[in-house]
Image (tube, rainbow, N blue to C red; front, side, top):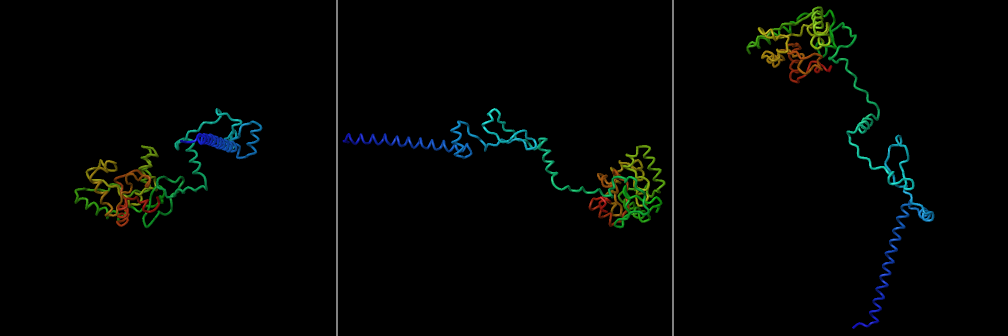
Length: 311
């Protein structure tokens, strides 16, 4: 059985330990509070003591509020609790999406930063439009041994070779083979003089207007027919399809498109190539350029302008 003195001593020690523990906890609380107080005063002990003596609130110099740029700002971006109440604090701005107008302007401006890049000059050989004020040349234009005629490269007014004998011979061979497939072809328009082209073009302008006529008829001096190498082809006894878009749907036109290159002819104005040639699609207009060159264009599916590197 324990002695009463021992029990008393144990109780006394427990009370003493409680006081010590309580003192330690209190000391930790005081130290933590002091650290926080000093921190809110810029980690300066002098500022903290001064604030205690003067009874003022701690500054919050390290708190920065996101605001407009310097060029847009109407006040300081740093605020303190001394002059700003919670109600004056700006709410967090919503994130802007890339499609917002301001964002698009910023992106555009960002792209424009840096040295200006000169734009690629327009090639003078662009065939899709006439050159204003251009005069007819004294000599025709030859590139890679091929005579080129389009809205950028005209012919001399007095250029009058007549129908090409070589092109006619090639057409006769083409027509003879087409007969084997039951197709009877005829070249209904080949060489045209400068004077005749003038009459024809003016007639189209009077009927449809200059803008429309320029899409399917060449101005005098700019016509391939003046070279004697252009052949407008149709089928005998089917004259209603001659020089008509309907010709492209006939078996004769399909046979031509698949075989003309073997005889040195190319479809001069293919479908969907007006930006390259300057003229709308003409399923009946073929141009003689020789078998080897025609073969290359056919296999590559390109226009004469693309082959000659002028487009």
